[in-house]
Amino acid sequence: MTNLANVSVRNLRIELGANTVIEDLDLDVRAGEFVVLLGPSGCGKSTLLHSIAGLIDVTDGSIEIGGEDMTWADPKDRGVALVFQSYALYPTMNVERNMSFALRINGTPRPEIERRVKRAADMLQLGPLLARRPAQLSGGQRQRVAIGRALVREADVFLFDEPLSNLDAKLRTELRRELKQLHQQLGATMIYVTHDQVEAMTLATRMAVMKGGVIQQFGTPAEVYARPENLFVATFLGTPPMNLLRGTLEADEGKLWFRGPQLSVDVTNYAFKGAPDLTKPCILGVRPEDVRAGAGARGDALQGKVTLLEPMGNHRVLWLDYHGAQIASIDQDKAPLAGGAPVPFEIDASQVSLFDEANSERL
Image (cartoon, rainbow, N blue to C red; front, top):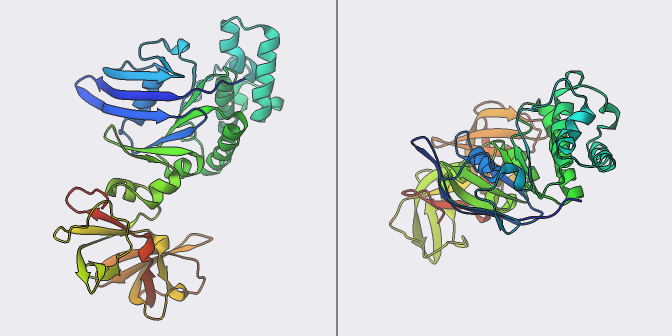
């Protein structure tokens, strides 16, 4: 059976040539968690994963797995199993031999090999394919085999390096669901790298959003989405991204307002981190789903004009012009709208975010 192990990264620094890819990074992954490392290309997420696997030497800092210092341990001694973006299957071996190769090399008894391969094959629906070679498999089936090869290791920690990025959209959706079910079945510790926010939001127990080798925010998907710590996180998550409006804070008759060139929003009940500073410019952020347009808006709503309508199947995205500001709204209404049509809208003040314009940090 799979053992549960936590992963603790402390003060990690990694230099590749003259470049510092990761500097003073801390990360704690609890036993049994599904942690996703999310960020744009080049942000250091795969480098961090490979350092945990032992494929990249660290410049400074420490990596503990299951309470043991593994900073300088060989990859084979770390109790981890890694699934790469490329399937990396042996073309001359069938599925069963691809999955059992590492166990055979290690001298695992045949009955134990058969038990592990059968268990992984049942989980991944590979039973009917065990006699096939990789060339006879679809892309999704090959990725399942690569995952199965990791599962038979019964490792303490499973590491996934963008395993779905080579698949088409339908297969990605199917395998994403299967990975989540697999984690629920195994209860194993998993760390998963992706640049796809949908994968991160749907798979993660907690997610670490990275930029420039630094973790910008680490929390549950719901926390990170609802309360982004800075403008990068706020705009990296969400489709369309968060609407941003510049302005200042102003006290008026016992209430606190965000005042911008286009509109004012009552932020009296906003959960500020400290005392609000009325002298500094700030940025108000609001998710498109919190801009209620059309029939969902009250009678005293603002009036915008439709500049673009994007049908998305079960909803549509309205792009509204309001005194020069472009505001996106996710709308469930099916009523036809023409370009330039006036549309009432309102902002849900209980769901907004405020950021310091100078340093982009959440207020």
